[in-house]
Amino acid sequence: MTAARFAVRDPATDAIIDEVDACDDAAVDAAVAAAEAAGPGWRARPAPARGELVAAIARRMRADEARLGALITAEGGKPTAEAIGEVRYAASFFEWFAGEAPRIYGETIPAARADQQIVVERVPVGVCALITPWNFPAAMLARKLAPALAAGCTVVAKPSELTPLTTLALAALAEEVGVPRGVINVVTGQGPRVPTRLVADPRVRKVSFTGSTAVGRAVLTACAARGVRASVELGGNAPFVVLADADVERAVAAALVAKFRNAGQTCVAANRFVVEAAIAARFEAALVPRVAALTVGPGAQPGVDLGPLIDDRAVAKVRRLVEDALARGARLVHGAVPGASRFVAPIVLAEVTAEMAIWREEIFGPVVAIRAVADEAAAVAAANDTDAGLCAYVMTRDLGRARRVVRQLAVGMVGVNEGLISTAQAPFGGVKASGYGREGSRHGLDDYLDYQYVMTTALDTP
Ligand code: SIN
Image 1 (cartoon, rainbow, N blue to C red):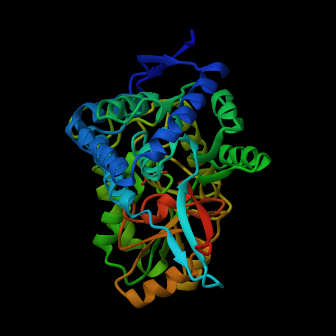
Image 2 (cartoon, protein in one colour):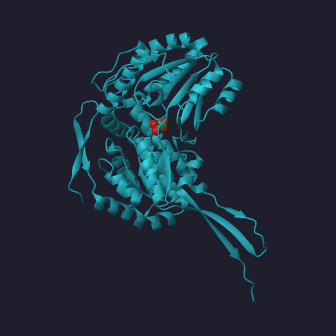
Image 3 (cartoon, helix red, strand yellow):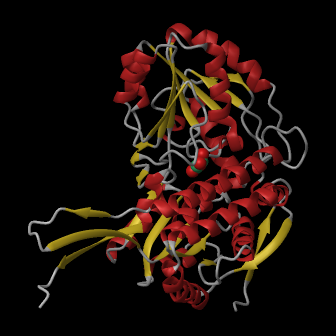
C-alpha cells in the first residue's frame, strides 16, 4: 500500500474528480512481481480460452459504455458521443484479438535430414509494461492490452497521470469477467518516477509506449540499455493533401474528422493542410463555414463538438504556435488567438510557410494550417517535409494519381478521401521519428510473441 495520493481533475472545470495512488518504487516492484507470478498460469491457459476472456472484456465494455464514456469525458474532456465512440473503438480491439488468439500459428520447416523435425512455436514474451497517453485512455490501453492478453502475456499498465481512472475501471472490469488476479496490474503516478522504475525492471520483457517523441526516445534508451524489446508510437505531423481534382465536399468532410476529432488532440490529426493552388480558394470557402459551425463547450454538455483542451500547457502551446504563424505572415481566416480558456474555438490559418513553428510541431489543438502549393510534385515535397512519418491524407478523385502520390509519402498510414483511418483491423504505426511497431490487425500480436524453434531428432527404436 502506498500512502501518497494525487488528484485527477476534470479539464473542463479543473475540479478534482478523484484521487489515485502515487505509487512508490515498492508498489511498482510489487505490480511487476504480481504480473510475473501470474504469467505461468495465464500462458498455460489454451489460447482459445484466453480469447474467450478477452471477448468477455469487450462485451462488458459495450454493456457499460455509458459509464465508461462518462469517465473518459470527466477526466479527458472529450464530448460524450466521442467518448462513447472511444469505448466502442477500444472494445473492437478486444473483439479483434479475441479472434486472433486461436490463430497464433506456429510452423513446421522441412529439415535437412529425414530423422529431424523442425517446429516453430510462437510463445508469449512475458511481462509487458504498457505505457499509455491521456488522449485515448481506453483505446490506447486496449490496443496494447488485448494483444498482450491474447498472446499469453501478463501486464503492468501505466496510464497517463491526467487520465488514470479509465485504466483502473477497465482493469476492474476485466477482473469481474474472470481475468485472473495478477494478469493485469495498474501502477499510477505523476512524472517519470513510475515509468522509469517499471522500464528498468529486469522482469519486464517488453515495453509498449504511446506518447511524445521526447519521452519515447527516453523509453527506447532505457530499453536498449538492458536489451529489452520496445515498440513506440510517437508523435505525428500529418499532411492533409488536397489535390486539384479533389471532390471539395468530400475533402472538407474528411478534413473535419481528421482535424477536429478530440479537438485536434490526436497523433493522427491533420497538422498541415497542403492544397494545390488551383483548388485552394474553393477548399477554403467550403471549409470555413463548416468550421465556424462547430460548437465548443464542456464535453458532458449535449451537442458539443469540441471539448476543452487537456490542460493549460496545451492551450499555451496552441497560442504560441498561432502567434508565431501570424507574426511570420500567416493570414487569419477564421477564429482568434486563444486566450487563457481551455475552450479553444477552431482557428483557420492560410499562407502558412515551412519557416513557421506550426509547420514543424504537432499542434494538438483545433487549428487548420493551410499552405497552397503549385502542383502535385510540390505537394509531395511539402507533405514529406517533416521528421514525423505517422500518417497522411490525400484527397483526389483520380485513384491512379492517389496511388502515385501515396507511394512517394514516407508515412506508415494513409487515408485516401478518408479522414478517419484508425480501426482494429489495420496496422497502426509510423516510420521515421513517429516510432516503430504496429498495433491492431494480425501484426499487432507480433510485439507480444517470441519464436521458439525446436529441432527433434527421432531415435532409432531398438
Ligand atoms: C493517437 O492519437 O495516438 C491515436 C488515435 C487513434 O487511434 O486514432
